[in-house]
Amino acid sequence: MKLCVLGCSAGIGGRYLRTTSFLVDGDVLIDAGTGVEDLSLAKLSLIDYVLVSHSHLDHVSSLPFLVDTVGGMRTKAITVYTTRATIEILGNHLFTWAIWPDFSEIPTLDAPYLRYQEIEVGKTMSLAGRRPRPLPAEHTVPAVGFDLASGHASMVFTGDTGSNDALWKLVNRIRNLRYVIIETAFSNKERQFAEDSKHLWPTTLTTELAKFEGHAEIYITHLKPGEIELTMQEIEECAGTLRPRMLQNGQLFEL
Image (cartoon, rainbow, N blue to C red):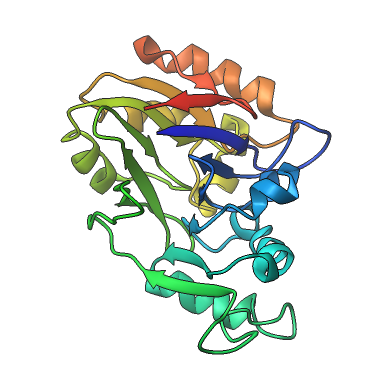
């Protein structure tokens, strides 16, 4: 299993700042932020599955354009895997006809460009031989993270989350965990903003990582533009022996 980082920023600006999206094996997206827009038309047309962690725009903004762009080029619908609550949000607030056409209905109800598949926290899915598992997240809207297992190794993506004891109870049971991608959206000086929006900041990142009982490479995602250097400096000062590194756009992982 190969995962390429298409976007890992909490904002935009310049060629290296793209919002959250990862491409797995060429046919699976994990979230559909602005990073998807850098893919060629040929690569876009190969995407069969989109795993959506939650409904915020920085994680789904490219989904309407993806479906509209390649729907007519494909022989089957793109399937979005997400929670029932997020399916309802996408249908009620994004694919509304007022904001964007509802591609779960067109070109026909029987053969739409977009389908939804409900997922549940802790219940492993089957995606053409791959077995991702949704993990609990604590955010301002219903949200999940994902455990991506190849059979040889696993990677955890926390999604957007605040303090999350339930996550670590599951993560600590993963025997072959190699990588953890965890968000830290704000610096310590923006603590109140982070707390209100249910994101981590360096101090709470340290608290969360103290709950991790295993060994893995730790990568930081979802940094706010304009605070990247400050936030990473604060993380380096307080995160201890795990030595988290900043996730990079274009970074490739093999599992």
